[in-house]
Length: 213
Ligand code: HEC
Image (cartoon, rainbow, N blue to C red; front, top):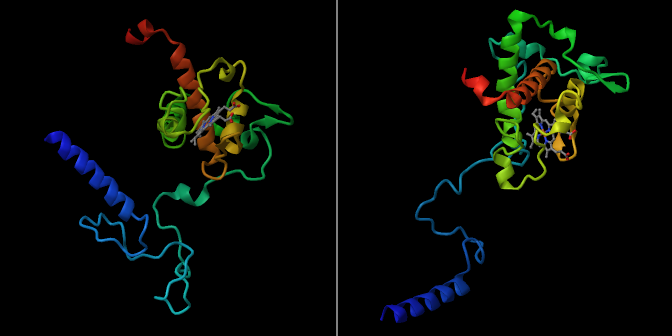
């Protein structure tokens, strides 16, 4: 009895799919939605026309005189270093990648900790999605099809093989499938990330007994 029911039911399901297709497959009309889930909304896609405005443009220009409204002074003077030369801006001395952090960062014992914390935070925002919180290359995107993400703990990225200037350069200009962040992350923050990547690499080589002391 159950068997017959299942067979009839499956045939019916296949028949219905054959006639009506899957969602959005066969009909161009708006389907009847029992649970609309915000599938359809009144909105203007960016860069597309709209009848609502007289000149027909969906995108509205900024009101004249608009300025950044923030008490964060640093927003007005972010330095992305485009087109600048020197180790601080490029990670290179002439044709060679440099080692160490540039003196322009003016790091001292007091500021170093805040600098590293900043690096950790920025790494979490910009890098961890791909390289993972620990740098092992298994961030969340690796589970959704981004392949070949570098494991930053591989020996060829260690300090003796891969100088700080080169790390900085990869963050700035990207490499292969990784795009550059030179236009998104200010110079100082890129160096802070460099420092944090080193910290991650060093942390990996500390034996766990040492850590629990
Ligand atoms: C969208 C994913 C993605 C993000 C975000 C990302 N990377 Fe990558 N990264 C990759 C991939 C993929 C590679 C391998 C590139 C290749 O060799 O083709 C790579 C390679 C690298 C390498 C090795 C380059 C070499 O010389 O082999 C370093 C170092 C690196 N990334 C650091 C970072 C840092 C630091 C950040 C954060 C500012 C970051 N990445 C953000 C995907 C990403």
